[in-house]
Amino acid sequence: MSLRLDELPLRRRAMISAIDWDGIGPAEAKRLREFGFDEGVAVENLHTGPIGGDPIACRVGRMTIALRRRVALAISVVEATA
Image 1 (tube, one colour):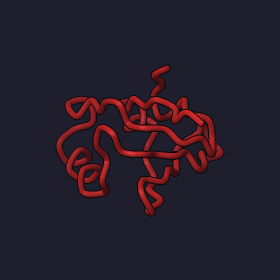
Image 2 (image 1 turned 30 degrees about the vertical axis):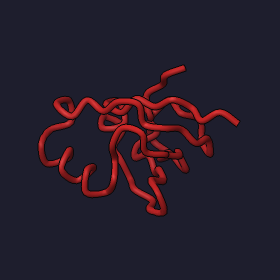
Image 3 (image 1 turned 180 degrees about the horizontal axis):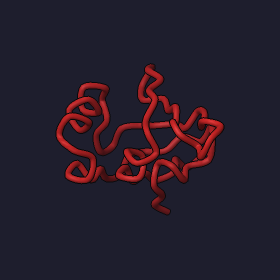
């Protein structure tokens, strides 16, 4: 089942299935690519901010990255199966 990254429950691993690169703008898209965001990459939500759930801290590889919720809306994921 496909979810947006902001909908992924905390501490659940998933694989990035699609990224709407046009929906996040060129500067943010470049930053995400530099951090390793791409289709097929494992990701995990670690924490959400206290006010409106912004920002979202997620793990990509061995890095923890903070994303704004508007960016997480552009990232589709599929939960990893056990």
